[in-house]
Amino acid sequence: MEVVLFLAVAGFLAWLFLRPQPERDAAAAQSWASFHGYATANGLQMLYVEHVYQRAARGSKAHVSIYGDPSGNKRDAWFWWTQVQKGSVVAVRPTVGWGPHTRRDDVLYIGTEVSRQSGVYGGIDARTLTNARRHNNRR
Image (cartoon, rainbow, N blue to C red):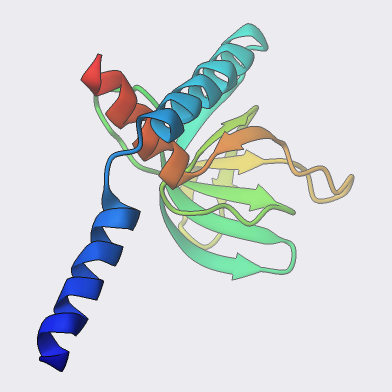
């Protein structure tokens, strides 16, 4: 009896938290549209954070792809003074340079060490991005 009650409660809670929520998804789609419009209007490049592989006091290193690029090529990126999250999209003005650890000359650098500027002008977290996609796919 207790097992049945536990399963019923667990099922209800799963439904409650995992069910589609159109209002939340619509709000996420609006946030995405505002973010995308801001980035485009200001000539910013949008990067999708594929994987964060190092976190440090002065920033984070990640594999990124250019959002919307059909090739999906991954690049190394160093984000000065910012801790980026996997699955997020950030709006930046990167510079390209030599990566002493990767020994590649196409590493993206976001922000600057000396001025302590992060170089990230905005971002959308992974959950908001997922909800916005779900809303836009329903339309």
